[in-house]
Length: 123
View 1 (cartoon, rainbow, N blue to C red):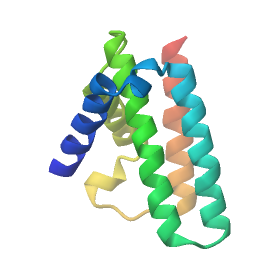
View 2 (cartoon, rainbow, N blue to C red):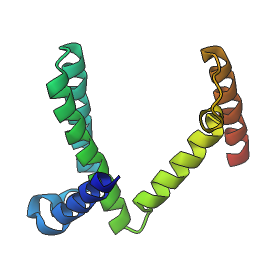
View 3 (cartoon, rainbow, N blue to C red):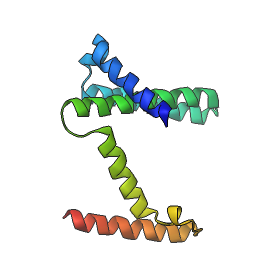
View 4 (cartoon, rainbow, N blue to C red):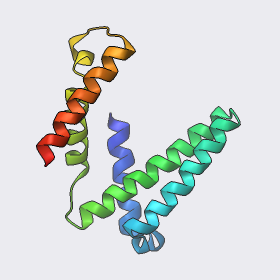
């Protein structure tokens, strides 16, 4: 995962040292991400895997840039995002780490049951 750390550090450096990046807000970076997602869709539609790889990288950059901005504002960190997401998917997909094979129907049932429990806990 060393590449991920280097990638994230580079996004942070960009935010610190690029005047263009410094001017970006959560809202404007979100718009950048939406544009990249549209380009991802076009690459998929065109079955252009080389372009898809490039556009996924661009979207990942914008997603990480959103995280950097949120960190600057003291909202949350990338570590918190990753841990909360891991916790959520570990709860919703417990069979993955248990090495079990289940059907798509069983998977849907477990996913929906856990998601419903999570909603009740948030109320």
